[in-house]
Length: 166
Image 1 (spheres, one colour):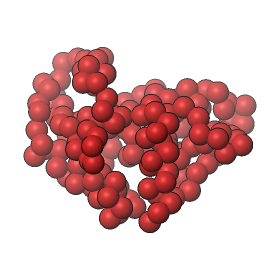
Image 2: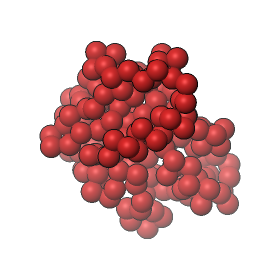
Image 3: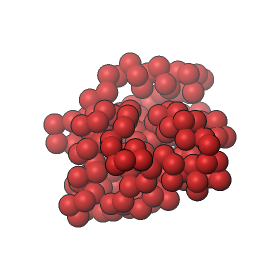
Image 4: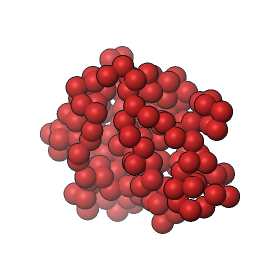
């Protein structure tokens, strides 16, 4: 199995991006240290050949850049998230939150018919390593407050503002 990776450059930031033959599997945070992706890839793909390739990732990075540059509101490439069945269920629900809108952790819990699972849902959201493609930045607190985000609150704030401007 091959795991292709590159760094996406946008404005003054870089993001690690990775994919397998099945689809995009990793979009990290802005300026994320390389060892975070290295550790993640070794844990989830211990036998994979890791191949640095801008070309292999171009179909993904082009769409991600179009999103970040407000030229597109959708991402249509295949994704291959790595997680537990519960995490995958939560992440699927996040993809249903439309561009430019937000939902609360409670909203996601209700959509999954698990109204008492908001903490578990928050934990699952925190494990998402497909930032942008699985839009966990659209999930906010019940009172509208911005809560934790793997990319940090500045990144979350910027992505939400970007979606509001289009």
